Amino acid sequence: MKINPPSFVLNNQFPREEEPAPRKSRLSADDWAQAAIDQIAEAGISSVAVESMARTLGVTKGSFYWHFPSRDALIAAALSRWEQLEMEAIWNYLDGIEDPSARLREMVNIIAHEYKSHKIFVELVKAFDHPVVTPVIERISARRIDYMRRSYEQSGMTEQEAMNRAQLVYSAYVGFIQLNTHLKHMRMDRDQYHAFVEHIVKTFAP
Amino acid sequence: MKINPPSFVLNNQFPREEEPAPRKSRLSADDWAQAAIDQIAEAGISSVAVESMARTLGVTKGSFYWHFPSRDALIAAALSRWEQLEMEAIWNYLDGIEDPSARLREMVNIIAHEYKSHKIFVELVKAFDHPVVTPVIERISARRIDYMRRSYEQSGMTEQEAMNRAQLVYSAYVGFIQLNTHLKHMRMDRDQYHAFVEHIVKTFAP
DNA sequence: ACCTGAACACCGTTCAAGT
DNA sequence: ACCTGAACACCGTTCAAGT
Image (cartoon, rainbow over all chains, first blue to last red; front, side, top):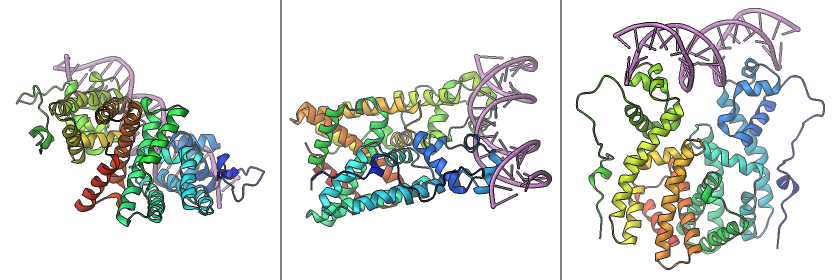
């Protein structure tokens, strides 16, 4: 009953629509947005700097303002692009799995590995209070919590219980990715990690 | 069996040692540190700006650099002061309670209300990846997790189980304060909140 | 349609000079 | 011992001028 994720998940690469072979000398707004996504995945929201990105892209920073009115607009466009291309691909993949408990397990599986989209989510949580970031996390979180709530309801919980449980599990998830990223005592080797996941599964079973 | 917290917890005010009545015209490093603590509690780490704080304190920003070598050094001093004065006072209060389960309940109680120290902790979690903030959260988190681990062990859990449970509860706590602060669907009225706390207590019972 | 280059504001940092 | 004032670096933002 093991489900193998598709290659675009394993490769941290989601299919792009265009991307012609010869690099065009002039840049589009999407070029800037994609560069911003990569920058966020590598070093977080705060590392998105117009001046240094312009240097990397081989233009002056002044040219940036032809494409976007501000740095925040660039971040917003980058996150929107990421939601539509990368997050949506994951949801489509998950929705293709019939069995609800297999779907939930696979959701955990994707999150637990260091895929690019998970890395970006970790960076977003770090910048939780940024006005452009908050609504993105809000949308993603609402969808994930709802996803879990429905699974718990299908397992026979009352509506209220299922909601509380989903919110609690999601809180633990958001807290853990932060603590695990930053705190020494929360970094675990493979055995500890599996024991911890076992404990979580047992504690949060319907 | 209800325990009333001491006035310094309810008033969000912890006793200060000196503080003479006539405001001295010259500033000390502690004056800057205390101003930084208040600023962090109000608007977070990123709002600590040398220039605007100098304006508020009635000096030029140049004078700041007589007291501290950098902005980061100010933040470090502020957080150190907060740990020693405000956090330590809470721990001393908690350690004065004999019954372990009453202590744990009171710990949750203090955290659940919007005291200044809790506000500051929320701000620190927002700036989790700041190199000056990380070790502070690390110290506080290690102590709290250890506190809970011991309680679970005293309740008969194995060492490993108690550790996993403590880490899981703490993860949920850290995640919840973030989600509750920022997400609309996680804001609860009094009834919802009590039902949620009930659910947590039941789920995480030893 | 896209980019340059120079300007400005804001803030962290330095330092010689003042009291 | 503590502070001022002017300077500089860095980065976001604007805009007239170029192709």
